[in-house]
Image (cartoon, rainbow, N blue to C red; front, side, top):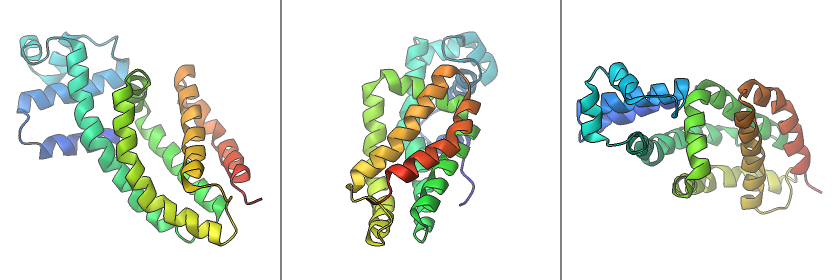
Length: 216
């Protein structure tokens, strides 16, 4: 598998390609992302954001009346552009898994996403926490992810099933099982405040999925 682009780099790429957002606003958004990741949304002040962005605090207030407005402005490109870009990148990696066994496929999927999360944990927590409380964000992410999963992973699952190496459960349930297992443990690590605990559970997640998706 190729190297994963991290969330901050993808965000910078999206900002660079957007010619409608003023330069100072981009600086404010980039500074907000960095500070929210480093110290959390609640612990970040507008002054800290302005200082990091290299602008006057009034510049932030003129565009964003509250910190919540700033967070919403940050999340919009994340959901509409950054995450879809990263999903597409991962989808390209998934297409190289066509000749793997069930165990090899699950190992590659889980280890790849675990490595991505490890590299992006601080930024990822910001997104995870907001998606927990904002149904529209969850819906937007699922709408973007669904077609990508169907196009790239479903054919591989069909091939494994034809080789009698995968459960007869429908593809949507197989994907729900994989994603749900991963997300449940990501949420657990988030609540525990220690991503290392998630990494420690990766071998057990692979074993659990492998056994659960084996043909009967």
